[in-house]
Length: 113
Image 1 (cartoon, rainbow, N blue to C red):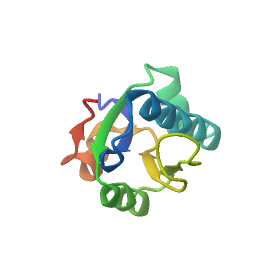
Image 2 (image 1 turned 45 degrees about the vertical axis):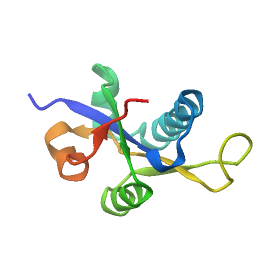
Image 3 (image 1 turned 90 degrees about the vertical axis):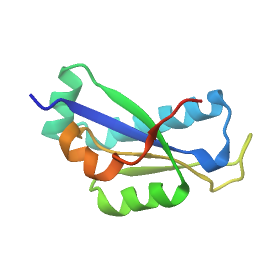
């Protein structure tokens, strides 16, 4: 069976601290849950193990995913702490089959902090 996975792609160009990055990913998870909770694929993913994978990319990678993946979301920072207001921090893909997601994320590396 092709597992369902949700990918988060962190903007590595911002050099966020681990805490900041974690908060931005959490913002993305919240947005995703609210916006996608009624979708069948999200429900199946939620009922299973809710597998998540955090990757890193450049801002151009985030924009490319956002423009090519339906129901993907960009997290934009408010500028209250480490980075300037309006910084594009994370793009969140909807839960999807891992094989399907590969066409969007296969060249990106795991986030290693």
